[in-house]
Length: 132
Image (cartoon, rainbow, N blue to C red; front, side, top):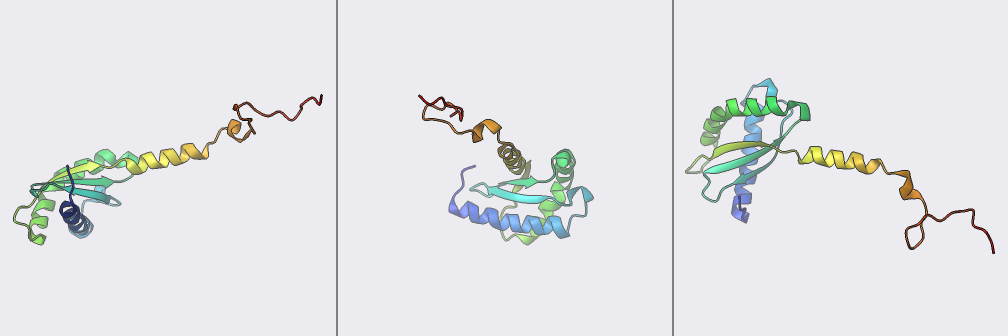
């Protein structure tokens, strides 16, 4: 979805309201420790993509819980928003944090060959040079 400054502002407003709804109004234990990482709102406010994150092994349970609670969340949202149209909610799992963690782990595992001193051509400099 193309985002403008107005839709970004609306997305931030919607993210705050959805966070409050998930925290206080929805009592599904499968939605505990779920974080809303972002919201994209269409320019006509008819659709909102909600990106959420949680532990990797809970993706399926959380997606199922959000799908079953979508109607209730939308009706609560309709009462709290002053928009003419209540957007259709499209929940998506945001895997960016998992990808960032795997990149961080990969960067911590630096091969020993990278710490070897090399010359301009990239060949290792050996300490046992023969003096001529």
